[in-house]
Image (cartoon, rainbow over the protein chains, first blue to last red):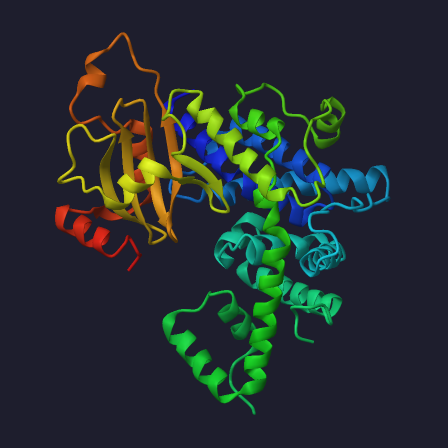
Length: 168
Length: 251
């Protein structure tokens, strides 16, 4: 493996925390999220030469993750229609605090969106990707992305209305 | 009040997707229309709430298997998720620790750091993980912030190479450790220097002259990354000094 690949690996390591966060926004539990990150990192390292220098490595990784996740969702849909329940006590940090409650509310609301909306929210509203980057990751026109985002926002507002932090 | 700002435009404003002219138009409308301002506030609150809900993931301990996956020699086959799950050995990943996130977050940083330190980087304390990924600390951060390529001492522990403005409008600088064993590219992100490239070279016994060069050369991988991310050319001595005086805030 040559030097530029080694440099890219270092960048992938540096991206791991964000890859995990993105995985957590689109999957329902930590196990799935970390499995997804692992699988995606392995796939990415096999095809590092496909990454275009000058483009964003995070977007490229997110695209690999998105594809892997869509495959997984389809495979599960065929195998069984049972959704894994969200892990109980997933984030027991400062249990019972307002912040903790808010986190649970958000995770629950996110789990009620459809896959397309969840991906759009994860990329733009959580990971902060510009529309153009997010649309490329998802392989859709920008207009489609923004309408998915708008619907996702309406849904989240409705699901979270009354929660502290979101004015009704 | 009826304004000409569409919902789509308002959302694009909330997502920082508008150009300056369009932003001004929205801001004028916001000033005149409390209902529009309320809707914007609602969107901003939602975005902030999502940010807060997922930010703690960044500080969770990094499972060893993920670090290993990123460092491992490339495998010939890629597993699917269910196979990965079946294959996975039980991991001593701390979970759901009551009130323990900060402590474990620190351990995650050490783990990542250990990878580099273990491979002959600095003695430690030069790198840390943050929300932005890997960031410079200690001597490295100080050198990136204050050292000028044009005036640096020949025996400085960190040598600065190129400074430039990146395509995403940040100041970036390449650096090389005195021994030449570690080099990288770091870009300003808030008050941090975020590592975009980090390379480790084994000191080459076969070619001892390489390490003895007064100015440690920038490794090709770093140079390549710098060139790929550069907008325009590298800063000259005067531009470098001015950027340092401004605290490396993007223009």
